[in-house]
Length: 464
Image (tube, rainbow, N blue to C red; front, side):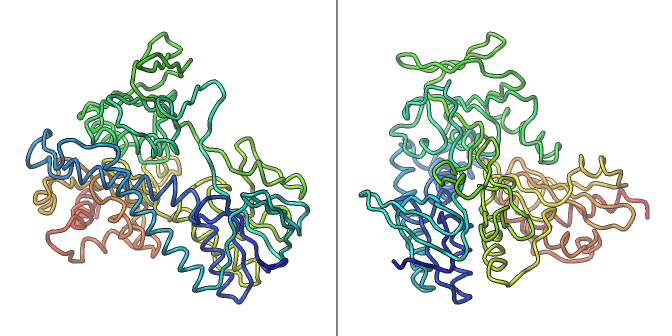
């Protein structure tokens, strides 16, 4: 470890690692500082990769994908335990860390396990686990510290029965019942994952709606699926208190209703992990949730030479966008400006059961903007590939402009949604029209054939 670097990155999640490698490829000396036991950040250890690995493990062991053929009682493994889920999770995480460490080594990116705090805009102090401290300087900095679960003081977290989304990966036994407080992306994902294990789940949300950034018809279809398989939805009533009794927990609502459950997962948002960085020393402010404001073209903060990327800057808080933000920040920091992706056209994936993915404008958006439009819909269960897979639900919705026939949005709920969405993304970004899907041939049988079906549905409704 040297005393000065061209670029110091604080945090080794998607934004941090992509920025570090990009700067190294420009010939810069780079140090990544992360307080975690291993590199990878929240994305690898408690966020994106673990939750998606847990989801895939549950779907495989439970036989969820085969239940359309063999009935809802079908299971691949009769007795699924928390250890079954944890074993596969560790294998996946170890592989992810090994790949990242090799990537750092190939590009000569140094890494240091330590906490960092600013002394001034050019200097930081790093503290090792044993208490040893060093002062380092850098020409440029990137804050990529991510977020952690929001834990209000009135919720009696105990790490066993009342837990946050980080702690759920460490549970020793699967609960006999689960209440999830918060119907955001994280809450919905875990609620549906545990429901696929046949755990009775209650999903609690103080608002009357969920996933408001997703097309309402897609959300309605998703909610119908949840109700059909027994997920209890408690919407529109805030939580008053959360209590723990001897063998169960209680969620008391402001309307007097009480929900008894063995375990509570509290997922009401996240906060930026910025409180230990001593940002006051450099004159950098954060919002109420600890997030940093940046110039969205360069990802530079209000302090020259200090950049921020990833979840710590807020929406959209996706690993996919964080990777690109980190790359753009590094290029800008060293005089290699690049175009910023159009924020309207990146895909959003929700890895619930079933998946939801969306790109472009929703029907609410086009109505608000006064755009004349038509919609086409395809049901995944009506495709031949859907028959082969035993799908019983899922849909694709395509929104088309009546003025110039351009595809404005594609929204999918169902098996493979997060993969299928990229076809729609490409056509939308290339300003393609519905005619592309009508006139082209798709492999048969595939779920991608749904694009042709949805396009023809819209085309047949349009005045030609």
